[in-house]
Length: 128
Image (cartoon, rainbow, N blue to C red; front, side, top):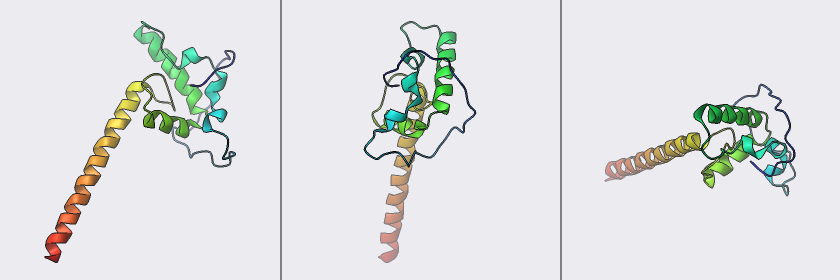
């Protein structure tokens, strides 16, 4: 979520969950200049203190609907995963969902390293 302007009502569009990164954008312009959330209220993307669970879930779903129509959703999500952003909805994922994605990536990377090591060891044994 970036600096918002005035609050506007949400307009929901049916959009696939994953998109290709925007490629025709000026290379000098940062990805966030095209973020849809720049036009929405920051409170939609970040939890107020002591927010009741039902209100949080409703707010997060509304934020995800904004993300779903965003042309830079993939870039936003990757930014939040690489930083990592500990709060808010970024790229259509909550902080908890991003933690799950990061844990899966770590497990996948570990499995790939183990597989590469095993393949290397097998190649050495076969050559010897």
